[in-house]
Image (cartoon, rainbow, N blue to C red; front, side, top):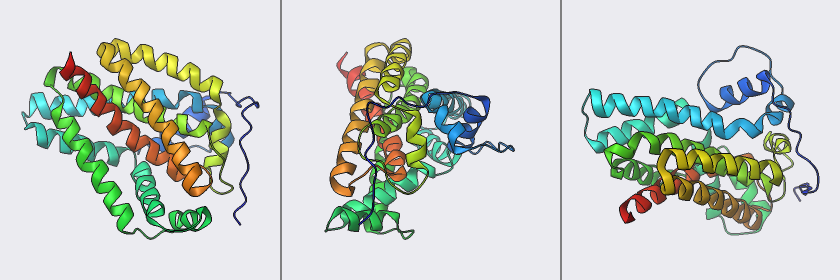
Length: 264
């Protein structure tokens, strides 16, 4: 059997932000080259700042959006497609891999260990391809559906929500015995998460008022649900689940931004 270690919720997260840790998270989250030695421990100590690295990625995505939409005058669907392509390229396709691996694992019939082994397999199956296809076309359609006046703040906020969903999924569930995910999770606990949620709610409100607040809430719920699903189907929360939480958190928050704007 695969041995896992239960996460101790009473244990405090090892929060110790450092320049090295922040640069490590930037290097892991983007294609920006960081030519220095950085340890996993340093990165884990800076996990509290990961949502705001997502915020920075969102700002870069918003600049690309402005150029495509306002300078080049591309259509909404082409702009949305290129924005999504840019974002998954700029983030190194790391989290997309999590969506596909999780999709493959969920397709398997059997016990959690069997599903976990399939998820860890380097091959991509039908479940993985279908999962990525669903996430990709839904994200592109959602970006294309955002009204022009809300597009820039929506892109900034959806990347914050993506990372918030990811760190939320770190807090609950059993830690995997393999991969760097279990080490990264040492920098997050429910108290740190609450601080991140409060700050994100403020940012969400400043960007999109009530729609921004709702987006932050649903991204947290998304992270919670995926960690629950992973615990039930795989017996633990792996690095692939964290990556999938990023991608699902982005699209879910974006959909609720659209719904809230339409209803107001």
